[in-house]
Length: 306
Image (cartoon, rainbow, N blue to C red; front, top):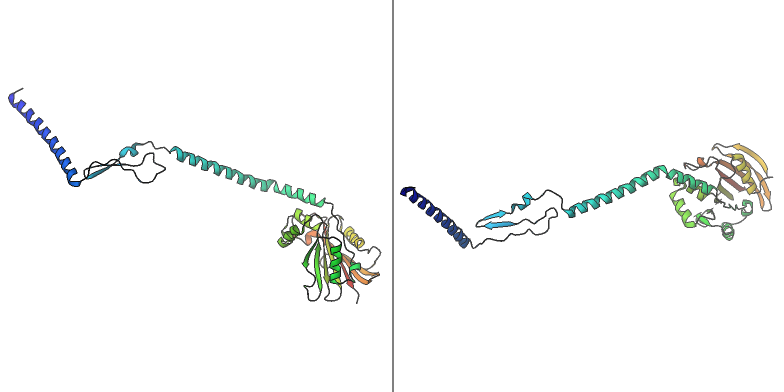
């Protein structure tokens, strides 16, 4: 190597050393001027559930650098988030299974349950305990209610005594196995809105007595007959209930409303009364799907002769 080459290498080394020293001096001067020193990494406030590590920054001189470690982290869901997502999926699956179970149960099993309830209520042994209208005809409204109450009936007053200025009232005798509260809810809901099973439960063993005083003494007894099986037997059964088996029949047939009826006059110790028994299919009165086609609606009417 020549002397000139050695000289150039020495100059280059000197210049490099000077450059490094100058860079260090500038950096030191910059720090001194700005009053800032290298700051440790700063963390962001709060916790980000999707980040493994909080972001940090490094400041060198006037320049602030973000930590690039987050850019190189694996793209995977944190364990805590995975656990939350898994729990949410399990809860959604359970709710979905319950919903589907109830839906298919409603479609497949509800009709079977309703039919079973209907048959159970039809098979109930309940007594009607019909009142004898001819014995009630001479009594006042208050006396009739006292007699019914003393008989131990569970009564639901639809039109209480004393509320009609013309006199009269309406009362329902409930089945022995149906409470007043339960019956009240059913009547408020409306018989037409009940299932066939609930309607039979409410109607079997029940009757409605309506007393009117507007145009003379008039009493009507109405009930549902689930036992007779035919209209003819239902008519004969109603006549037996009121002691009319041997009463004079002056008229019979089918009226304009479709009722099969018999009518006549009966003389008792309390007076002479006009009577009428009428029967029609129960599903002609109540629009309830599933009612037995051998169920009938029976009406018995007594009026005082003028």
